[in-house]
Length: 199
Image 1 (cartoon, one colour):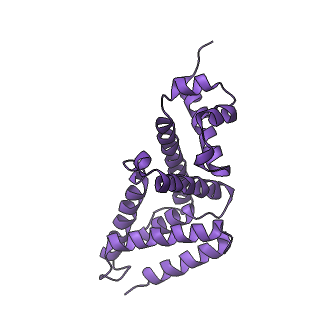
Image 2 (cartoon, one colour):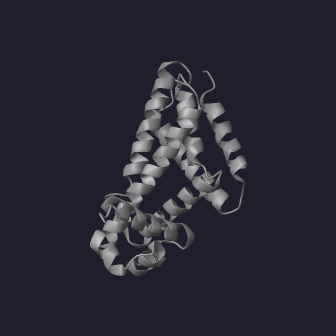
Image 3 (cartoon, rainbow, N blue to C red):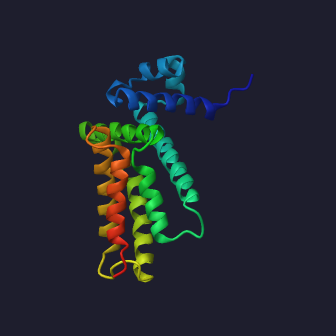
């Protein structure tokens, strides 16, 4: 019987992501991941020589999951897409408003906690996804500014960074029980209404 190596890697990486979501990455030893995946420790070590390699592979898969979610939300926003529609869809998809987005947000939080306790592990890799996202948002804001949909004095990069910081803060407040996902979405919508108010 031929072994599907990519399927095995996915099975192991997703076991790590489940542990990260429910217990935090400090609990994700290679042995714990093997138990969660239902495979031997030796098999985990065969596919991932180091824990760092496993962490980074799982982080890439988590990034792909959030990208797929964003694409789904962008598709649901309808076409033709507008800068405001794209910005709203992307930021709304990140907010923890349903079980999937809450899982993704909790798992990213586990990675951030790891960065704080062991900066070298993810220093080179941890910002790739946020940087791409910030760049995408800045591009949409620039397009909206050129179309006269937002104040010409708004700096696209600063505005994009501020919006992402807002969503990250709102996400933490939802996970911490301060407010509901719907309340967080209402706050985001309020800020977007202010941003996209025609000058």
